[in-house]
Image: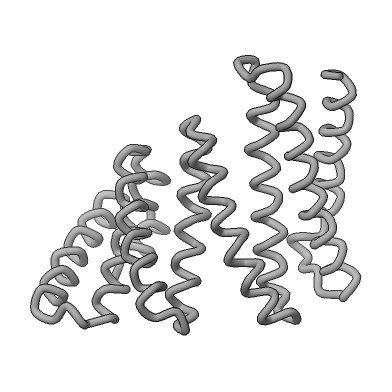
Length: 218
């Protein structure tokens, strides 16, 4: 697919056209051979790329959500049919995180939390099986923080009830603390990348904000 490079070059329409062309090809391959796992995975990726183009380059959030959901349906089915295939799970987690982010932006916080939690569940499972993998630790720390952010958004919403605000601030703090613990663990191992050097302090500030907010709403 040329779509990724076309996105980088700013050719959004060309990238979307390339995605549509790829969808037709992979759907035809699957129609000829429904057992073709590679074509099925490529089809899921083409839907995911369509979502990225629609969301990031064209601002079509509704279309992007639809594409991401189609991608997830494929990767969820593949993860069930071939649970030993780590690529399928990686694609699935990526889809959960992306949909969690875009749903949060559209105000569907319940859907956002649901998908971030699914991503966290998989990352925790991967980490248990690969405890020395720093990239999994980094991804998990990020996912924890994203969950904290969604709960903080709900806590800050004036439409949330008084008790609901308190509960969401506390929930946000729990996730931010998990994120901070993970970042500090990575740093203690000497594996914190330069681009992530400020992450512990950033998350620490979010915890401080949660504590301050909890005191205010008591």
